[in-house]
Length: 380
Ligand SMILES: Cc1cc2nc3c(=O)[nH]c(=O)nc-3n(C[C@H](O)[C@H](O)[C@H](O)COP(=O)(O)OP(=O)(O)OC[C@H]3O[C@@H](n4cnc5c(N)ncnc54)[C@H](O)[C@@H]3O)c2cc1C
View 1 (cartoon, helix red, strand yellow):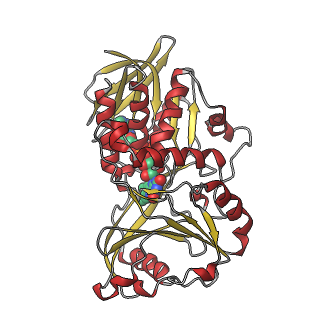
View 2 (cartoon, protein in one colour):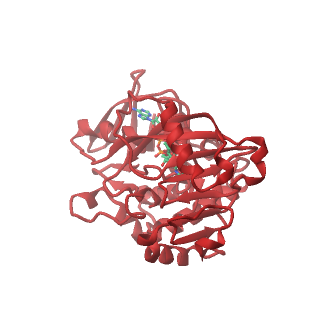
View 3 (cartoon, helix red, strand yellow):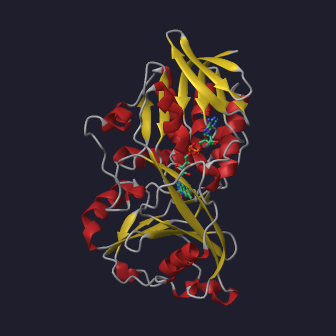
């Protein structure tokens, strides 16, 4: 069977692009070697914030969060699990000027806050804090399934457990072969395969400079006696090198905001080692007395697909092949709105000219983008 567009990868980016293509009437098929959300998307911390140093991404994130907050309506019944908690960003003295510029763009009650006004946190070394009231977190699996189901209702086909083993591009289109031996004819192909994007394209002579890192998320459980001291909002402690997210009841998640070790996407340790959890727990406890008695309650490790400037990569890599990848540790909340930009790119209609800055060709011409704060480029 032939389709206008085929997508490799049913992570949150692949299914979002499928949804936006299908609702425009484009015949679309998505292949994944597992179920939707089975890759890094399903292990995402899913923090949703519009605090981006890049003005375009700040706007995409704001649109993405609006979509997640109104998910049932937009998808015809899906659930994103979005919970608005607000977020504080803590910065050292070197970040003050960029933090001020970034906060100004937040709108909607986002503001700079004097460090000594944060009486619930130890703000040693913090020169400035920023409050974003609209931030929060969502459920990455439920979001991905909701988008996949909505794409299906608009006519897209989602082929789960269907690994793509070969891609051939010819003058008439792209042929994709899946592991069961079927060949699928496509007018165009979008590769949104996260850490597997670069290896999938290499046999075609397309060399994308994407690398893969293993990142750990620790789960911590508060001592019930400290429940009154729970940090009720997302905390991105740039000065301290970590983020934390409240969870229902008395748990919270902690992860790092700086680069981590390279990983082989097909062979990496998926669990968090006790010393990795302990390191993250200690970093988070420095700011909050109530966290000092928290107990480790598990954790996991998953993968970031990282571009040289830590910003997403979307654009054409050959006549009929596009990519949407390289979103490292900040692509979840972008996806519901980013997928609309990617869909418009694929159909060549009403493309936002600002998307061109994210084309993969930027790495050939020294046009890398700025991102985040110092080593914390994950803030985008
Ligand atoms: C630990 C962690 C924490 C994060 N925290 C946040 C956060 O707080 N906020 C935020 O916004 N973002 C966060 N992110 C980033 C965000 O989750 C990612 O940017 C996003 O999920 C990437 O989605 P994707 O669809 O591009 O790729 P993926 O989720 O990597 O999906 C790629 C898909 O391609 C499939 N695939 C691969 N090869 C093939 C093949 N040959 N054939 C068929 N299918 C194939 C895989 O099975 C997979 O399902 C985090 C990520 C991680 C790992």
